[in-house]
Image 1 (cartoon, rainbow, N blue to C red):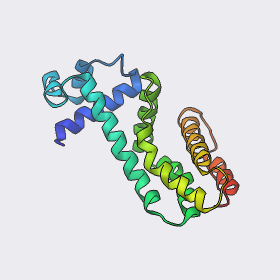
Image 2: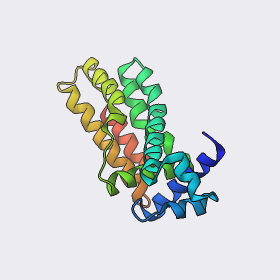
Image 3: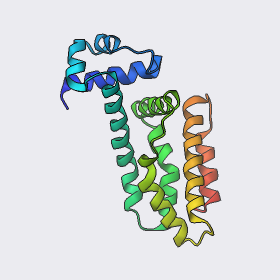
Image 4: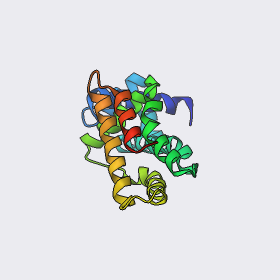
Length: 175
């Protein structure tokens, strides 16, 4: 990706997060990125193409976040690493801003990229199966849903006690 493409994506991320996808025009993105609007069309086709590039970037970031979890073989470590993933991400302001946008897009456009979490869900199902949980698929789905809710609360709720919540989950699952 060129430096200008990165500037365009960064500007779009910022504006979509501030104003929403529907309220942001490509001309605003171009102005913020200090490029011509034509350059946006050349690289991304249109505003939808720009959004698709941002969503794709989110999918790539999710794969990077989940890679270590998926490669882990010890079941309790799989669960622990998944529970701690938000703590790891919360220490990086740029990552928080990036994921905040991903959540905002999900709600504004009513899209949910379930495929982003399929590999980690399979790893969790396997871990819960090996630990002899009665319904490993439902347990994995519950943990994914809890973590989605925890991430939302962390992003939106001022003074949310992330550490206490993560510690509670680790105690609940004995990891």
